[in-house]
Length: 135
Image (cartoon, rainbow, N blue to C red; front, side):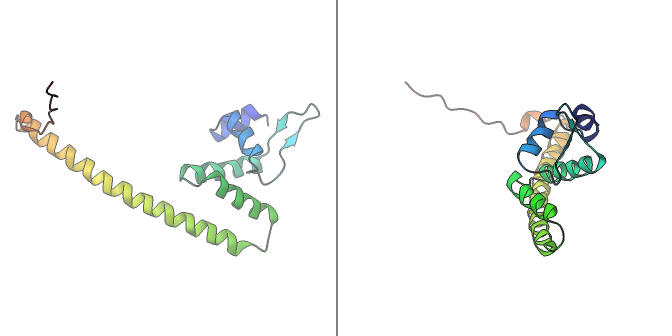
């Protein structure tokens, strides 16, 4: 399929697809037509989906490249792949915990605002005042 169709199916732009290729994130060479246009296959789309999900979880391009290189090498480095994924899973878990903590604060604030609005005393909410410079 064309790069436009691959972009549509993967949900990333054609520019991103070209970038992934230049950055060495693809595990196989993208096929080309006689005219030099990229031609994607389902295996390419599946791999792009993996890369996209890894990026969405905050994995750096450099680490995705390491992973892609390991996968492209084939069998024999599964322990390294596992270690890479375990390290990233730990990072993602820590980020999720931080987000959950932040969400608790947001939900607390929502509760405060709803309560004050329901009690019709929102004017009692704290609002900082700026001190004016004396000149």
